[in-house]
Image (cartoon, rainbow, N blue to C red):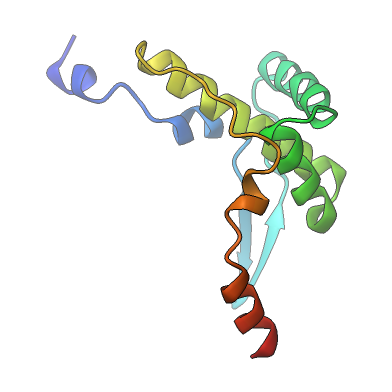
Length: 124
């Protein structure tokens, strides 16, 4: 094993890209559009999709994340975003054995909204 592989165990976005859960941008000239993420590993993607469907119905941070994304992006894109978030979270938990998972709670977004900033943006 080389010293480079011991220092560089991989990154979460590499795993998400391998599973084809990363966003994709198609560019033609000055026009940028989103494209399909791709096929990826069907077994991993299927399991993550099932987990995302299940967690979307819960009253947790991930359920709140799904509800926020589905309003502006749609059901399928929200499921892929939550599945990617689950995969990245699992990668971090497996890559560092001392890391523990703690749910942030469904009200995390409302607690971290700066009301003064929101008012200023609406007035502007």
